[in-house]
Image 1: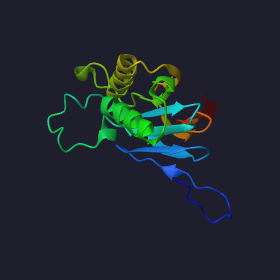
Image 2: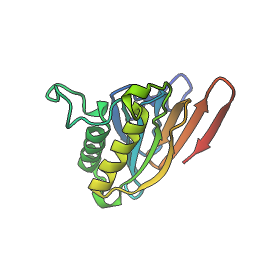
Image 3: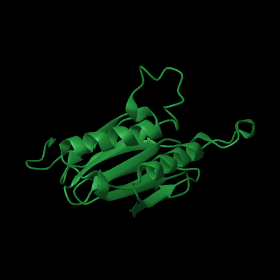
Image 4: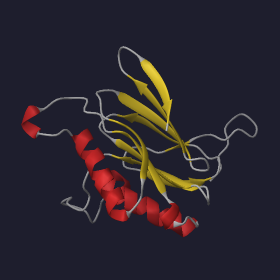
Length: 173
């Protein structure tokens, strides 16, 4: 899935938008912008260098009313299952897959709704990963700030850029 920009030989990142997911391999870069309460879920197999990134918007697809017409990337639980399935179809070993997550901020407080969507997204992803036996080896979640992530399947490197009105930072998981 190599795509090239204006610089000769320079790969362009593959954008993974809200409710989308993508699977790739090697040095490809998968990128998601503007994560607030949404959750970026990065799965990868270090041996095959196959990985995927999902930009999940909501926690529980199994409980969704209209789940027959949903995008699997829309929900944390179904995004994880879809990523795993697509990765294995491309040659990843299910038992070697590891996970990293970022996002899940609670940008706004609504006391009447209990836990915010961001926290529920994080909890749903962790529960699904545990249920499927996929180890979570890195996370940058919560808070009240936006994030952008860049994921490289070949190395499992997840770069998280954080920004709020006072400061910006970059971390690597």
